[in-house]
Length: 297
Image 1: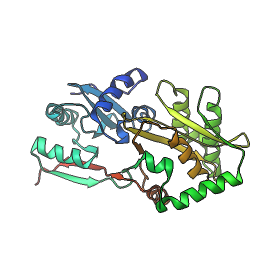
Image 2 (image 1 turned 90 degrees about the horizontal axis):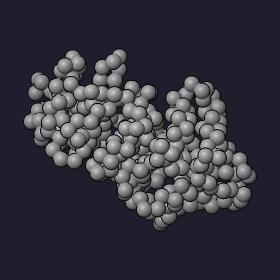
Image 3 (image 1 turned 60 degrees about the horizontal axis):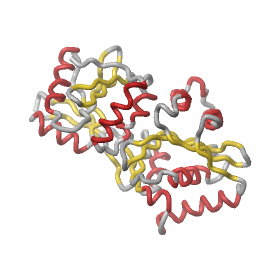
Image 4 (image 1 turned 90 degrees about the vertical axis):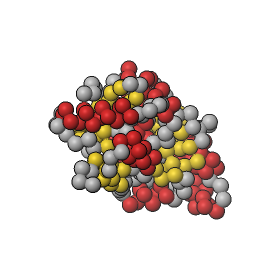
């Protein structure tokens, strides 16, 4: 049986190294994500034979297991997942599988599985070049939004998040909630942003704040998945500033020098968010699946 535990900050450097070497572009290998959402989704982790396994718990038992993350042959780890599930009297339900992991699972086990696409959980992945330069006709509307923003709000500035302005980043998230009649102090995302800012340096986060007339108008932050891919975890803006989302997106990505790909995460099944993500022309939509062994097949 696995020795699952809630992740703590001291676990993250080792997990980060495993995830970096694995080479995935998926946000499930973003160590900051694993930490800040650990309470909402009751995320627990285990290192086994050099692999990293994540599980989602409910009522003290895992309802979903990740595919093992690590270098080498994961056969023994997958076998232990089935063993762990059996000993806990739960189903070995694999979640957040990519297409490649789904195929690997079948090849390794020889089992037949029932797979289900997890709509709303797919990652939208972009070229840094596209988001930073907005080249060609495809991005004409985005360039116009930014140009209009610059004309309308000439006294704007973009500043990296630091120990002196974290409160301004949180103010944006707080106002974003209030504009939607959401109580920020009971909102899980607001609490996650607050904890991320509290542990900003330890989580290896990088982010920025967009100001208009010295007032915070938007904030964003994320972390490295690997040397090629950056994960944008949070992006909040006050829509009273026309074009603010296009502006914060573009200014932030320009700072991500050295990263080839930008993961802007899932659309959560929200149609407006899906259309917004598609409007930036992702080069990969990383689909996700759940899978359970089909004993009847």
